[in-house]
Length: 391
Image (cartoon, rainbow, N blue to C red):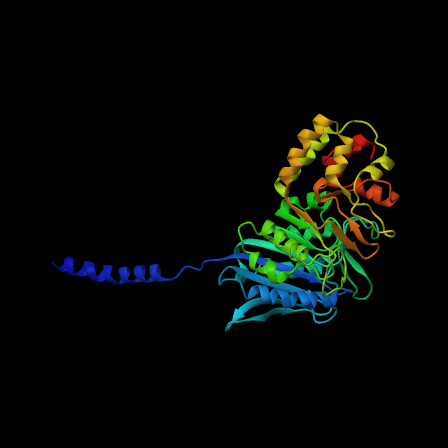
């Protein structure tokens, strides 16, 4: 009988402790953490401030527990990292960290901000996204490099090369989407360089509207299952509804249209492999190609040439090869939309053959000896077998 009384005395507190642990609520991570990186220490600073206001409007529509929205903003003074969050039915800026005046497109500076977001356990989530906002130009040369995104004017003018962005992204969790709210970034060459870091790659094949993405519409979609495609469609629909062939265009009322595409990165290696297998081993007439293939780059100066990939391969491949190749390209393009015309700050309105293009660009050599040499160092150049064309 003595042991019978001892047994429940020992067991009783154990059961209480065990039940207490079971009653503790588990910490459920947010659906998605998204960093919007506003490298706006340049002539776009006023647009960045407007976009920040739009993000607050969008965040007000997001359900609790769905989205950590982090914004790094540098407009030339007081760079800071903030989280936009709801508090007492209002969206407030919760300052995570402030930084000294800096070059926000520098490798170390960018990596520091990315670490402050993606390595912070407070922002752990089921998935992640990144929007890089600034000036950009996939193939304008700067120094020895020809690929850059982001511009900062602290103590001179600085740019971030794509190779540096690759270095930064190596320490970031795999992204559900990577969006460039910047010009000329829907390039197959750049998307291929970044393919291992993200499931979906979003960008424009041409110049983007000064006001940028309509963030009051995009933010509520950032935690969606198919966020990349839904964000792309919302972006396009916004500009399509106010499109008026550029009539009455202004920075606050953009009637000049836009173009945007979404690339599935898991199809890019197959696309490169198939391209290498199907390309003929013969030199092609570059001048003829440039006449026949649509070019999204209409700038009379600083010209690079961003040619439509679909039309390029239509010219280079025979009919049977093209029929096989286009199926893979169609798989790679998750979304593509453009208004009939787009606005360029250099030439005004120009036509986009929407139905005959795919919104993903490709370089054709010949605009610069330096650029051509750098082009041959790209992974896309090697993996797609472009040396077969004499490029």
